[in-house]
Structure formats: C-alpha cells, structure tokens
Image: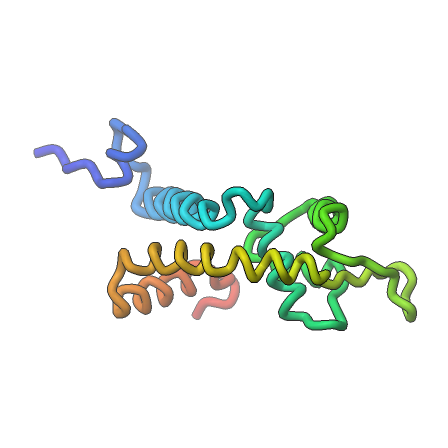
Length: 162
C-alpha cells in the first residue's frame, strides 16, 4: 500500500516521497519560515520597510542613545544580512537612523535610531504584534513551548551536541 502524501508534499505538489525524513523536515522548516515571514510582512505593508529594516530599527531602539556599531547590528539580526551597510544606508537616507564615526576608533560607524525612526516603530509595532499574535494562535501555549524546544535544538551547533 503506497504511503500517504504528507501535507508538505501536497503543498509543494511533489509526487515522489522525500529522500529522507531530514530532507522533509528541512524543507518544512524553510516553507514554514517563509509563510510566517509573509504574515509578518503584512504588518509592515505601506511602511516601505523590509523585515530586516524593521529589525534594525528595533535593535537600535533597544541599544538606547549610545547606539551600536554596524557590525554589532549585523550580528543581532534575526536573519543574516550580508549587505548590512546598504541596509543601514537606506534607513539613514529615509531619516530613520543617524550614523557617526566613533571617536576612539574612526573606522567604526555608530548607528542610532532617530526620532523619526522611533515614531515609525510606534506606528508599526501594534500591526506587527497583531500579526505575531495571529501566528501564535495557530498553536496552543503548550504546543508553542514544545515547538520552541525543537527549534532551539535545530539551531544548536552540531559540534556542541552531546
């Protein structure tokens, strides 16, 4: 008796089974991340910001008046952004971020969120938070915790696993 197609196989309209459970898991995580990202992007509609730009503004708000160097921002992003300089430059041109050379190390650029960036975040946050809550409602609280535990395991460096 042939094995029933998984939901992911049906979504992808894939006829053959996956090469392995690990293959299906990996594609399932990527497909799910893309679906959640689309849901969150709806909260940013009309703002002209990408999810990465929104993330930069939130990081800078959290950094406070001292700001952060560009490379530190890059390291704190949810998703890696190879073009962090371009990302910050777009936010600077839009008036949401202020940049200045560091006094002790002139090679380092310190970024700070501007008043306009703070105002934009205040406008967008209720919309993004509503989108996050919509995603969260798809699982019970216990399911959310179990899912997070599994995602934590997936993100862990294989070299550090017992």
